[in-house]
Length: 344
Ligand code: NAD
Image 1 (spheres, rainbow, N blue to C red):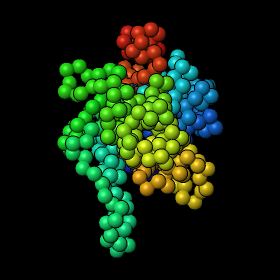
Image 2: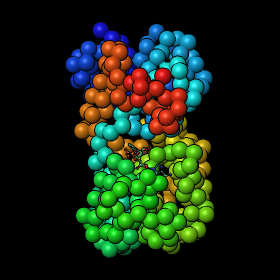
Image 3: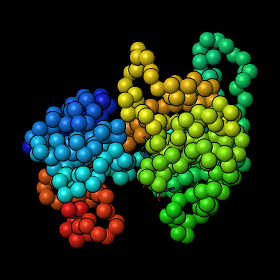
Image 4: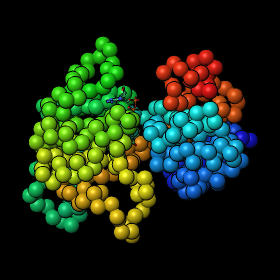
């Protein structure tokens, strides 16, 4: 039986991976810590390592893994901004789960928006205390509002459909617009200027880092709502905080935060939080923060486990790595994926 090891294990991961591991003839050793330069030694003699969004997969981690025999990092997520691909290239293949449920993430984005706008998070606490007052709970109709969607990939498109179902006017920005779609594409600047609400569905890259910054916020409508279920560093958190304090930003729904890696997914309720920006943002009445949970549905967890185990099985069986990614992918240079079915 082929063996893999698994970092940053949570109980809900185990349920779905354990239910499928026999089907793919794979034995799993689960580790609680996140993968990083200090924990990479734990993967000694494991050819395959399963990792997640907040693991630190930098050059140091990759070098330790490689020296100890690892040849595949199987990301159990779609995003891969936490990997030093240049360091991995030629040494360790990287696979991911490109799609597991765009519905899970898009529905969570709308859940956050509805909760914040209609003050459900406040009302829930009030009525549990038999406080039936409505003061301060006024929201606004989503119907007729303009929402700007940044990134019209798998999740962005599902989110657009949901918004259209609410009777919202949708405008979108994507440097790679879908041809012949009925999506109303505009420039990023126009999107910032025209939108009552903005939802982020693009990957974190050097081009998108801090795309919501002081300059962008300056040209937005007063009272704009910002929804981020993509990656925290798409938003400059200090600029967001200033925007909230000045009331230029009317609300923020955040499933991700740029400095989340040491906090999210853990119970920090007994710990003094040293991140003053996050603490202040969370304290705002017009902010909802969830702990990178947009993916967390039964369907998504099942699909993540299944695709990850298929990726691992294909690696062990020397098959094509359908879901491999490298920093040369699509650039037609060193990446050998089209010719040799693997990136190197
Ligand atoms: P996708 O690859 O299908 O779509 C991404 C889209 O972003 C593409 O259409 C691409 O052209 C576009 N894009 C690229 N650069 C851009 C730019 N500079 N400006 C605007 N758009 C740009 O990806 P997806 O499956 O829709 O996922 C989107 C993002 O959601 C992922 O990158 C990931 O970071 C995030 N995500 C979050 C969770 C969560 O639990 N919160 C779960 C899954 C994915």
